[in-house]
Image (cartoon, rainbow over all chains, first blue to last red; front, side, top):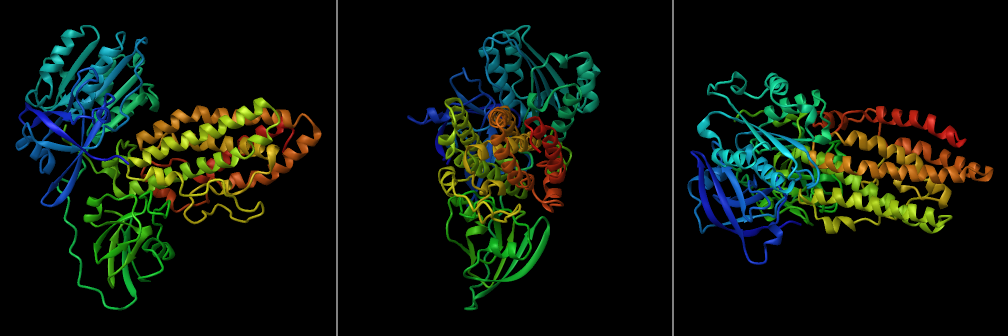
Length: 358
Length: 251
């Protein structure tokens, strides 16, 4: 199982008013674990008010830069991104899991390919890693980047992209689409929706020549661009996605306080929420797992291994307490937040409230 | 571009998920269940087939059977590694069931799961020698092709990618089976034995597509994890069998 490693923060560079780029250094001996493929992300963990948060941020460095860098844009109300933007400084230590993610296509140095990238806001980070890597490692390939932002001042990596365009004349084309700033060409103003894609494909990008497309941005943008690319003949295998984690809650809620201690009664009143529906039933405290009790009460609870290994049956205890016999899947921080593997879970209080929807 | 939308609306509209941190809990549960079913079925299928390698009539057949065993194990590993990114203990998972274990040939299990073992029900039945194994592989090979076509467009991109990558190799396994079956039905005795195996496996492979009117289907469809119903997939497989089997002189 992937584990966390310490990374020393070597540099914190302010990229825009609300975004920073961190340069990170693995400790001696950990370098191999942090060798990355273009377009991958790192998952960080940090405790805020005693509750651990995990956040994933894409690597923005190319594979040939000899550095590990991530870009972090501050999200309104986001605990981790705000902390990284306001308090993090060189010399601090972050904890991260090795790079993960499959937002890339194989490098083929001898092949001449045309890549098309779409980035919305901080969605530029993995695309920057990809385009820098393929421009170096595939000397015959070219890259067209369509980059959406609200305004000029919010464009991350604006100067670096300009420099890259000059270094790779004829191989890197960049189109900035700005939502609230008028440009010389109307096509480059507004949001990237289906209509905008259709216009871009008519006047600016020959989709028929595209070998692979990469999209990273918020949900509506991903939907409209993917639909448009499919309409223009790209297959699912040619379209790679990275959804950035806009939907993540800013701050994890602390575990609900457990109710008063149990009586000696051997029965528990279990209340289980699944797919928005809540059912209450009585179950013995011993001899039957919470999962089996839920299944016996005709609830279609998810499970796979029933051995505490796979974590399919994970749910959150909202009230009451339960004992987990075996746990090979949940991390300590998840257990502290109240998550249980229901297949291994036996109530210890007279009342137990659990949700599969949390 | 800070505009966002509810993740379930996004999935309903055909949106794609890309990493464990943006998967909502119920989605995560169903996705893991789907992956576990695939992993268990590949490991059970591979373990069962391993035992008939020695029954293969020649070296080419033996190599083909070994290759199927090797590659199905590899496919299980790829999906299990992905389960690992969700926190599953992959080392323990790989050995937590006796994958070669089988029930009796005449066990009546329908499409039901057996306890915590998530393999498709068809993989609970034992193979009886080489001809039986080849026939099972031909019938199941086509079923796997249809399942992979369905799964290649599911909404969790890293998993859909894996299914797209392995689909050609699984298709090759089915072809190897069909090449083997051609040699078997060349004699009347072989054809008769193959027909007996078809009679045994056909209803059981058909049942592996799952129950009709599955209540979970609607949830899976909203999550973009399924597109065609169990009945549609089973019908499509049956139609394929109607054309395929007569080419071997089988019904």
